[in-house]
Length: 56
Picture 1 (cartoon, one colour):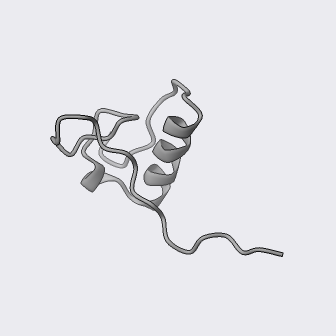
Picture 2 (tube, one colour):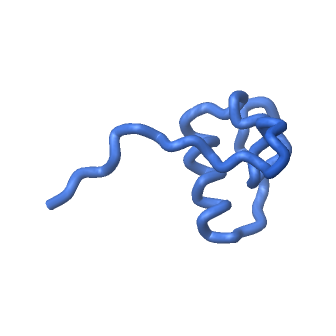
């Protein structure tokens, strides 16, 4: 049995180096653990869906 990773990986940043998330309009630095995971899944699944960021 394998265990789940203990650290949340950052969401991918938009090209251009502005620190913005590739899945939503917010800066990656403004994400909490839940929104990081949500945006990672959104990007990995190539989905288009709403935002759960606390700054939203």
